[in-house]
Length: 494
Image 1: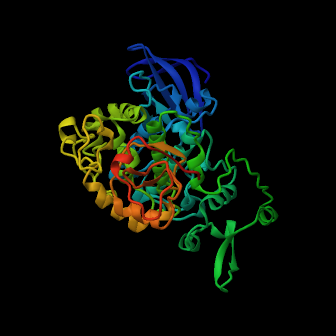
Image 2: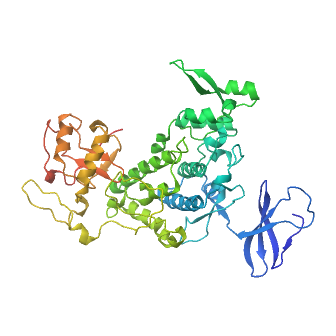
Image 3: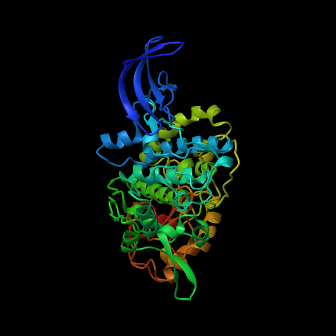
């Protein structure tokens, strides 16, 4: 920039510094002399080079720090899930608005998500840089859009695309915040496809059959059934054709997205907090898998992200009274309550959902925010009886309350999961909630899965349900009175 001043019809601007320069323009930090406010001015480049005096300039709110800057300040130390959650929710709300007007951002990345400087709202964000945004109806196949580490498979292959490419970018952003590094840091599109296939498996044949660029990265081969299928070229084959060498520069070489379950080491001494964190990780990874679905038609929509248990905290709501971690999760998203008007009817739920398999809706829904039951409501909950038929005190054992809807939830979950896999989820927990379900306990004992064990665990979409039995070894078919369950602990090994 040759001059230190910019002028418009309404004000003069003094340039403080240049804070960014890209393909389409230069961004400068300026002082607006009319009101002495700090603003950001984007000076668009003159593509045809015909205009010598005068440039198209856009004035924006000055936002100093992006999510990438935040990670760099932390020396790439990952963010906690309770910090990632409000960021994901706000991005999903923004993408929901864009989808409603038929617009694709097309360049969603850490650098384009800015933090709003506000101590009361530490993770309030705004999305910037709509320079590549386009209407969904006008999206051109083969467009060179999205930064490479956030580029979706359909863009790489040269397929028709929709707003689903922004959801893919959101998935990459969520993983980057959780691990502190890029999920797919490919320097070439071939490297991107190799990373994706190694982590998430082969791309759908219907996508490969229709891609304009498929033959550049894949070759046709016969499989074991003598059927033609597409197979990714080896690094050697790709180098022979294009003289471009493949270099694996991943910080974390994930063989599956399930490996994200073991990214965070939980060292909480409080068993309630440890259990809540493990449940949160399970739900986060489930959401990420849907965000990064290889088939764009099966990928989550923005409204489905907002309806997911990770965003609504339905999987943790029942532990709010016993876990400080869960309470802090609510505190991190409390300020989103005030965003109701800005979300145009797209309410954010943080309620306990009684049906764990309630279908998500792509339409906008408006509902009141519901929180865990009050003390008056808890009195109506079913309390387990001891062996002699006496009822425990509700005040003394409020964390052991059992809701009637959980028996139905249990039966639904049993139909989908084998008994043997029930307790392979966590390492160490304590009694948070006891569900008196003698039929399942008896079944577990008969199959000898719980012999000599102190307890087992089962997780569903919206809750974690524990069955605990006494420390002494159990005989086959032994029935466990609820009075023996109180205060028990359990340990299982992965």
